[in-house]
Amino acid sequence: MHSFWIIFKQAFLTKATTKSFIITTVIVCASFFLLANMSKILDVFQGEDEDHVLYIVDESGELAPRLQEQLQLADRDIQAVPTEQTEKELKEGIVADTVEAYLVLEQGEELTARYVTKSANELENGSNIEQAVQSLQTILTAEKLNLDNNQVEQLFAPALFEREAVSESSKSQEELSQARGLVYILIMLIYISVIYYPNMIAMEVATEKSSRVMEILISSVSPVKHMFAKIAGIGTLGILQMLAFGLSGFIAIKTAGTSMTEGIYSVFGFADVKISTFLFAVLFFLLGYFLYAVLAALLGSLVSRTEDVQQLMLPMMLLIIVASLIAFSGISVPEANFVTIASFIPFFAPLVMFLRVGMLDVPLWEPLLSIAIMLVTIGLLGWLGARVYRGGVLMYGSAQSLKDIRKAIALGNKK
Image (cartoon, rainbow, N blue to C red):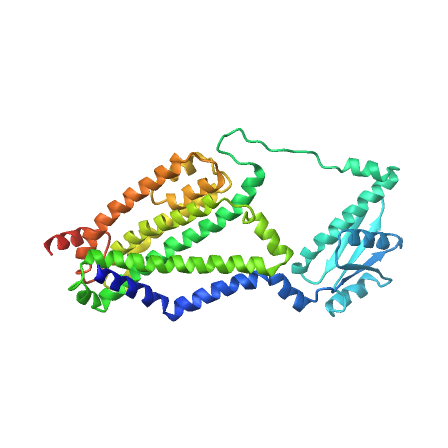
């Protein structure tokens, strides 16, 4: 057991102390604080109270003040300024950067407006102005029809529309909206984890073989113990890194104190989340990691050059990609039959079953059955992986295909 912990410590510290790992962790954690405070940073460069001047070409002279009223009601930082300049002069001002934009208003049977700015990228800013013009059009139409304010409010009052699902596993629309954001984030974490950390194991094993360090290690430690020590060491490193990411993201959102971050915190479901959802996230993270880690160690033992790792890892990567496609497409239809079936397939279950648990009130036996299937699969892969690993670490030369698994098993039996 002492040798197991030596390899465990070596696998953990070797990766934890690398510059790439430390820099990646710091950059990701710092990016959470950067994104959470992005609105404050933009205010510093753009000017928090800066008003955008919008020149109004209005022959009647009555529409510009009323448009300004609508902009103020909508709390827009846009100042509508009537102008006597011609359109030719205004366009010259836009080219010379002395005019941001202008709006041509004409009132006939209907109100028409034309918004002019310098580039297509700035045309998106016209959505706020378009809403104000639409409100102004509503008021002008109401005046023509001699409608009072109460009648206008009744005319545009939204209908009361409620959603109700009869399925016992369905949640309310509000619960689904909250769960969808949280599940999406956690699925992304699980997806990245089962790609990144198992690939790290395969590269580690291939590196030790290419440098002939493996021959020294297996002379004093059994290949099976070496494999599971690697898996446990890098798995522990992955858990700690994910905890660092989660903690930094949580602190960044809570300390930013902006309306945007508070909205994200609420919409993504962090304000009212079940503890069971996080517990299932951790459980499926661990099961998904060990499932793919054993497979990665198995594949990594077959190659003696790091250049060959990606070639043999391709089948495993395809499994992860298919699982993610099913999970992300199932976010909008979590009760679909293909999602239900995929949630019991062990290589898809870490993502898909967690999706169903997070977004549906599924019976407890379903996630437990999926977990049991995964545990059995991990056990079978562990048994097969141990046999392949025992012979694979002694194989050198270019790995051609998965057919080398049979050679590795035969060589392990001779050992």
